[in-house]
Image (cartoon, rainbow, N blue to C red; front, side, top):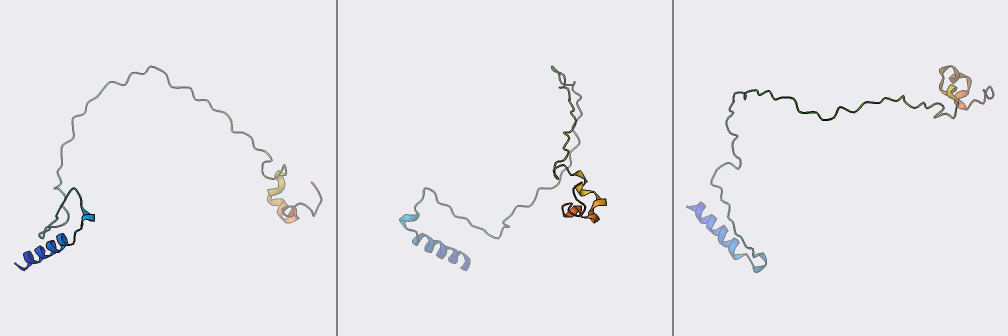
Length: 106
């Protein structure tokens, strides 16, 4: 009895607090009487596989386009301005890694 009375009081306060600024075309009330807020998943059911139907292959009106391969473009002297020896391990200890100033120009 107390629950119903408190719900009526809450509803009365809510209705009394409404003004014309909150006027809408619809009105709804949501009540929850101890039911869960979610629905349990349906039970798992296993079905047999459908029959297999073999269809003819689709009609082909055009052949597949030919595949053309071209060689990769050669990118010589791309990063070091033609000094491909700049990154050789042999030259690292002889100053070329500092610009090649120790032994002159190659």
